[in-house]
Length: 95
Ligand code: FES
Image 1 (cartoon, rainbow, N blue to C red):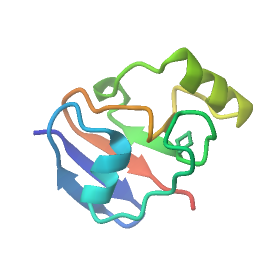
Image 2 (spheres, rainbow, N blue to C red):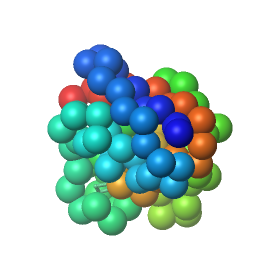
Image 3 (tube, rainbow, N blue to C red):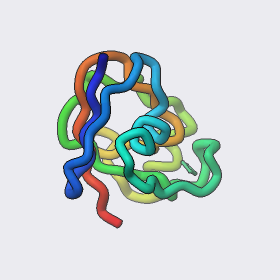
Image 4 (cartoon, protein in one colour):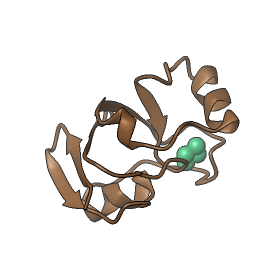
């Protein structure tokens, strides 16, 4: 199963492939920041340190929100929009 790790706390959890990043983070015991849960507000933005290739490609809606927040979609994703495909992922919370 894919393993999600969240820095700086370092909590991790093994989650089923296809798990939403937001839900995976909660399973790791992290209080995940979120607002709309609908890929439109940007509150849930998080840095992807490793494993971007193990995440779904961004939707046009996600790219729009990342752009509004001036976040590079090669490094940042919205946890309420993205599912883990397979393999391990490391995220870093900044707030
Ligand atoms: S919670 Fe609003 S974009 Fe993710």
